[in-house]
Image 1 (cartoon, rainbow, N blue to C red):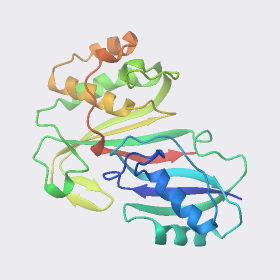
Image 2 (tube, one colour):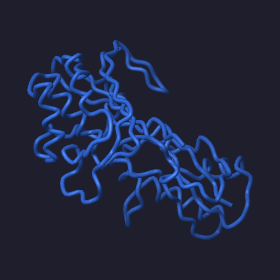
Image 3 (cartoon, rainbow, N blue to C red):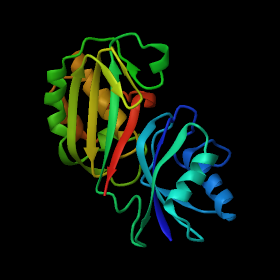
Image 4 (cartoon, rainbow, N blue to C red):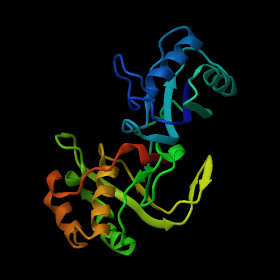
Length: 252
């Protein structure tokens, strides 16, 4: 049987999603729990990598089970074994043809920024950027990034795989209150929500970093089109930190 997992996790203490030798990773701890449940190693396949320190509100993954169990029992068993930073939201039986990564149509990420001092209990979930931002200029600049392009300028330096990606949505919204699934807090924030068919490593963080430079007036709006066409990582703005990045959803 093949099962699809939907899970949430706080990435603060993890060394990213992907399993690595001698590293504390989300994939690694889930596979350890699956082995305890089934009594044999079970490989977990995620929808993709998520940066070290970033979080997920609805990460997806699949595994092929050596024996059949009810999805509700798998969920209960996993949640009883997993560390408190990880929780399984849903377990579903899926067709043999389903693949957590290759069956996905799009992914949506959220990034949170505030110009205000960050309360201690929000320090792992929002980026303090102490500058006045022109949100309208950032919105204008973001339109150059919509559609299918070569995103080399917004990839991680040295990445070798193909750089063509398609951004389906890029919304920037200024809010007076921070709203997260577990809390609301009266702090001004700018919310970046980006949906694409797939993402390059650090692509969201590099895009947000560049748009923040536009908002500060350090990069002209029209310059974003030139950065995109230049296909050179050194042309874009600096990557913002991973701790304010969330995987919101994966669409199938």
